[in-house]
Amino acid sequence: MENKKSFGKKFSDFMAKGKQNFIIIFALIVLVLIFTALNPNFLNKFNVVSMAQSLAPYAIMALGVTFVIATGGIDLSIGTTCIASAVIAGKLYMDGVVPLGATIPIMIAIGGVIGLINGLLVAKLKIPAFIATLGTMMFGRGLSAIIVSIPNIFFPSGTWYNKVFSNYNGIPVGLLWVLLFALICMYLMYKCKIGRYILSIGSNEEATRLSGINTDKYKIIAYTIAGISTGIAAIFWSASFPTVAAATGNGYELDAIAGVYIGGTSAAGGVASIAGSVIGNLMLVVIRSGLNMVLAKFNLNVNSTYATYVLTGIIVVVAVLMDVIKNKNAAKIKVEKQPKKKKTSPQQEK
Picture (tube, rainbow, N blue to C red):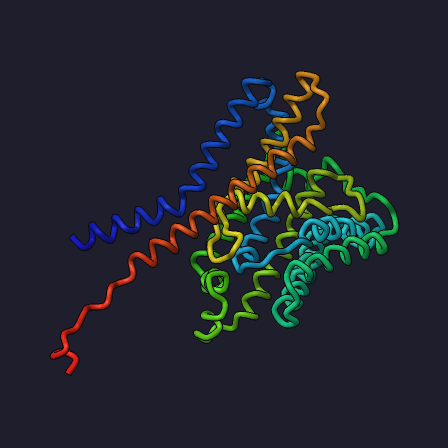
């Protein structure tokens, strides 16, 4: 009987945690059906590959920043760090300093160093995450442009680099890498003490610290993971879009972070959905591509980018509102379920 109750409780907890993901998947399917009905070319092979190429860098940035958001923080530098990593490594390749293969560890290293700096600023110097990462965002964007000193960096196209990280004979291999990285992030978040402590910090940092856990250490780890992820995202960006403009990337972080919130990771910290981060960014890619194709087909004089911003803004607000309502209801249920004190008679008190 107890086993049945335990199973029932676990199943209900799973359903409660996954409810938002189910809603997002349902909404995603509806969007695909609508865009396909309005423009049958939406699901043609070329557009599917194009969407997959767009998804890979955003999804990988989102997976990394999920660890930061789970602590209750934010990282605004991931977009510019991604581009800065690509342009600096690409410049070294263009100048013949390093071979193409060596740009991969260079990008990851640059992203990791910037992530580490963010972690130290937030955890050790106690600078608010918004301010610290805003500073590194601007710093990285400007410094990379100064180092590169040319407007555009060109990665080779049609090489092993593109086939391994972007498009192999029409197969969007970037999606396979995203799934692999998502599995690694799931392991770190749900099966390792790194993830448990990061979620604990997001739930109640002071209680976590008083329990003997080095909260500064795990905050730094969270920001470093986000930084390494931006370096990895730079690989997929440069493989999919061989021309990378210096001093750009501003705004890319907002798309990635929006997908994290849509996917069910709590803006307040303590709750994280790795799968949801991928699904949320997939939804944004579908919206962006679908609106572009529908508006073009019907010759509507509306900029698809601006229309995407409008729809994305509404979806993000609704997703965060759902999270707020869920947290309020959970707190209310917790209060109502607190055991009542048993009344004692005067004789028992004696």
